[in-house]
Image (cartoon, rainbow over all chains, first blue to last red; front, side, top):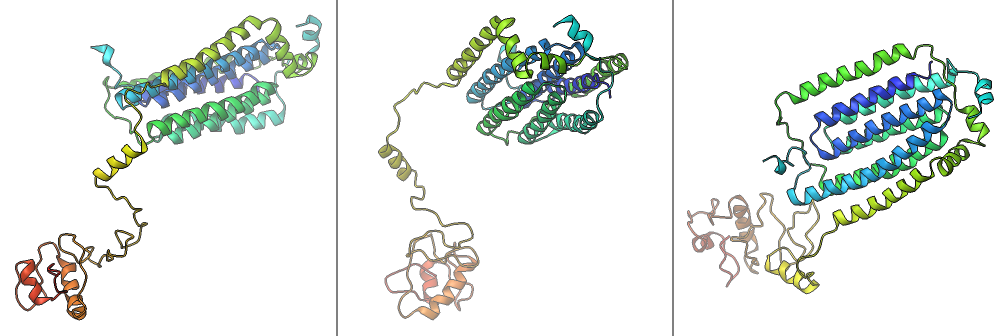
Length: 99
Length: 294
């Protein structure tokens, strides 16, 4: 098996996550799909680190994880605040700025 | 890294058999977990499938000589972040169903087709390019740095120390921001225990503990009779009544009649067609003084 197969897996996971973001309506599921895409990119970074033979890719993947953790905290807080005022977690219901 | 180290490292064109076997077991599970998360109706099932997927990705990190990232992935992602997701899911309510109304017509179909095309674009050229490409491998770098964790720590605290500090500031800001976003100012005074109790009594709710499921009695108190097979408790208008000392047998008959239709006060089994609670009293005598027709 070639190490590049990890890149194929990462590409598949990224595409699945992108489809999930476009198709799903529940804000939390959309958020989980974003997490899946971030993880796919992390996997590709680790694989590139291995192909290149240095650890910079792993360090960048580590930073991506930290930023993803911060993003999850803020995103879930925003979803919770919207749910409190609008009683809905659907991304279609948040359209006040549209009109 | 040192150039002589790079020269010493034999490029990997094919991994070991054990790694290949693990990859071919793990990769389908990861893809199926991701697909299941996108397709799952219940958001909690989706979260659990995402946990499986993240775990598989962690195994991929471990396979690629990145043990630090692998364990951080398991601890931070499948542990902390997914628990956070489940917390918010439970707060919002897992029964919140997804609307099937499309705001943009045909958006789901278009998104699926475009996603498939995107996957094809990503995977097929990639698969062609990577065929036979050598990989340097990080095992030597790890060994030169005194282990994966030491090597990453050296990079983090030398070359990337400013990024590291910025990211730590970001984490603190995120924590404070989440607290500010979810904090709610109390607009009125907090209700005291006395006010809560008064409101409960005024609302007419059951104050005593209600009997457990499967019990025919509607209350635990001794002056309430258990329900009859028909579902009623043999009382008219819900008022509690007691059988008189002499009317045991007749009262029993009246109970049976009351089981059928206690609401309108008729006693079909009685000899005289009765029309009201007072008339029914002739057919089914009850205790003196208690004028509730049975």
